[in-house]
Image (cartoon, rainbow, N blue to C red; front, side, top):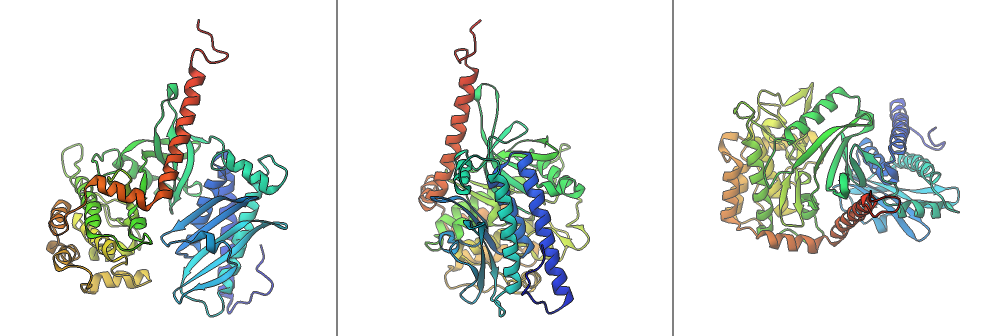
Length: 502
């Protein structure tokens, strides 16, 4: 796809970078589309992967895509940590400054004269030239997504494109009973840099099934030996984890040329959503309830032993609010040990690459030194600060500067945090590991003493009240699974049409 005729570049390097972006987006769209059609994963799963990967490509903080039918949205997918008012933003077009710190770039999705919806990306900062290069790339992304939607429309019946979209939507998440191994896919949950996670149900004899979170390697990475080995390491480690505050792993294997793992489906929201809930900061007793549970799960992982009884020396090293799931039953689960480090492993696994998220690294992790469980406690201290203040402790809006701040800068006590609670945070955030808590259990006990936690049933009630849409979504998964199980059980019944008793 050529660059828009009126687009001007200040240098050849800038133009080449832009054109490379266009080629990468087109290749990505082809790979995602081909994979999702071949495996019958549906339009919802395709948009989910495409949106996440494009957002990373242009360094967006958040993104959304909305596809319309004749009576309103039939599909809305959101990616990122930022709060999205999709209803409002979907009506925007072009580059729209949001205050003096963010800009949203929105392009329409069209098919001839028919409006199919919109796609948008949220980037930090403002753009003196109106962000013309970013906008041009976003518009190109929109045009490519148009073609992907058209391919799915061609698979359905209906008189008009919008009616066909509605037909697909009525079929259930725009797909028809796609399977990976013995798992039937119901709904996409999210996409990361390495894998996609979907709600699925195990298909067993007699209509007996269980909802799971199914994680599979992205198709474009399925042949990457490093990614595959990391994925398998996570699965093998996950099968060893056993604690009420750690996600349970059920199964892993391969199907249709790609590896997958089946895990416990947490019916709730991640801690990031709880922290940035729009109705104000979290009360200390809720923060304590959630983080004490997370610390107990983390301690169990830290204490894990090998088959020979020797400590594994496990370090999560990728802790963040996104990896702490808060269930509507009041139970908290730590998950995603995808880049966990065990004894005798190095922190730097590839030249120049430090594993983990810069915003939540310990000083020793940021400088690629040897780490142990106390590195995770520093990360938990950062999460504790963020949960109480609804802002990140050392966020300098740049990965390198953020890591430098974590290593060198002191963190002053905000007026809103009482001194006893600040002492817990301060000890967790000591620059020298030996000055921190000895283990996660000790940190949990100290937190309980200064901020008595809510009971689990109180947490469950509060979260259910705060996130009614998510509760409804979970109920939809359960209903879909229940109906499918009943249909299968009826088909296997001796009294079913076409089945004899003898």
